[in-house]
Length: 507
Image (cartoon, rainbow, N blue to C red):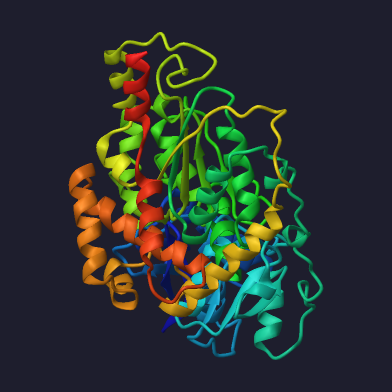
């Protein structure tokens, strides 16, 4: 007789159903695991046999064959220990109860039968509902927010808890009153009200946060690029429950400490970081910085100092919101939908266009410095900002709080979610959907076409201008894209670095 018990395997962040098939026949005492198991799965046979013996089950003169289906998928990790042990006990006859096909079992086993949590538990739980499971048995883990999962989770500590629960006996619940540590209120250390001047930059960042648009800031050292980017996260709306689960899953797979999830993650890798650290990879591909910034912000300070290869590797994630990592033995895909905030100096010395310092760079040096960020990467930037230093003693009006800006951003995003019937923003929605819901008039198309021809903008840039204009209209509570929104969007996309450079050469 063949016994089948369900579990869940992982391929990157994507879960798939694993059918654990066990057959026990007379023969030399042994246990064989087939179905492309890796080393950690092969070692499960010693743990499973030890637990079976600890339950006083006789496996003498029995040959146990375990098949992990689908056989063409490589199985990783000790996630299937619990399912294999339960299937063996059922095949031997120590478990009489029927095991439902819509129930999954996850967890690693100790030699005494206690069930332990393993890496990748949360992504597997998120995938369980989509795979058709109605109930799942898992070990206790305070880092997993079970109350956020729309799933019947049975929390266990020992293999005997599973057996007793299958017989109809109740077991102690460990998660009903568990409060996740990341649900505490988050207080921002930096606020837009503390930033003097830069009204144009603040307006641009408000638009970027409302539609999830990418921004590249250029300016001399000390003009406020890093401060603006670090404060940017304070005007982003809180993460939804689905967003929190996705972020937690990625951090668990990367073995990183999970940040506060009240607001989106903020990642700022150093420019000396390798391409594997930024994109992800390794022999067992792990999420990189772009995936850890999923649903949040990736800030690249001194962007021109990153290697050209690393920056060009951002092209696919910026376009699709996903990153695919291919290795000899596996190919995994991780989500990487983030807002890119880049900051760089206008030239190698940093003082091109400055009012206080004279630029000492030659025309050739300036061009070489700017070309470190390739044209395709520039094409994927929505907003180009040129900043100048601001005097600290200048007379400024009362600065607006980040909370007030964030409220407008949340309202703009709600309009987008209602329009698209999905949790997606203007910068990420398919252009066909955007064109259908917010078509341009013929006059607006002609105006955009004429300016684009003069500025030598690509089709991708023109589409980004339409997306920017749609976000600006959402902030203005307009149902259609207005002419003023298109003009403001084109202004945000113009890069006046060339004008500053020409003026500097003339002086």
